[in-house]
Image (cartoon, rainbow, N blue to C red; front, side):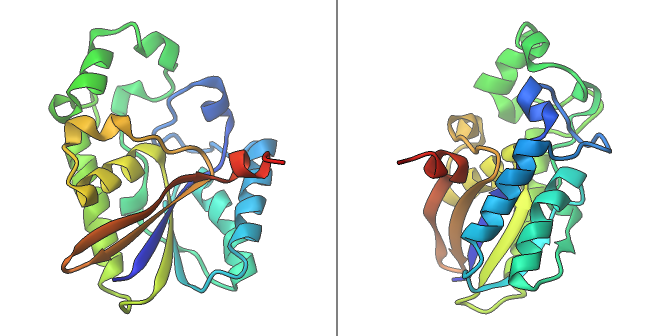
Length: 205
C-alpha cells in the first residue's frame, strides 16, 4: 500500500484575510507562508519520498519548491490536485458568504451544492480521487509519495477513502501547511495522520 502525504499549501493573504481564492491566478505565499513552506521542507528532509506532485496554482507550487529542493526532486504538476473551482465565489469574503442561504447548503448538505459557474463538491471529489488513484498505480507498494494540494480537495479525498459520506466532509479540518498521510491499496485504505499542523507543533515548548 503506497503511502501518500497530502500537504495543504502554506498561508497566503487570501487565507489570512478570509477570502475565497479558488483558481484566481497570482496568489502567492505571504511571509508567514514562506516560513511555513521552509519548515515543511526541513521536516521532510530525511523522508524517503519517491515523487512530489503538486497543484498548478502558484500557492501550491511555492509550497512544493523548497520541499523539492531538499529532496532533490522535480515537482510534477497535476491539474487534478487543484483547488475546487468555485466560479462566481472567487474573490468573495467568507464573512459575506456566510450570510447567504447557499452557505447553509455548503455546510449541511454539500453533496447537493454546485458553485455558481463552477463545479460541485461531488465533481471535485471525483477529480481528486481519480488523480490520487492515477498517481498511486504508478508507484510500488512501499513507496512514499507527496502531493501538494488545497483544503477542500484534501478533505474530500480523505472522506472518500474513509467511507465518510460527502455531506460529512466539512467535519474534517485541514490547516495551511499541514500534512495528512493515507496508506492506500487495492484492499482498502488507512488514515495514518490527519492534519499534522507543523506551525502548531513548532510552537510547542
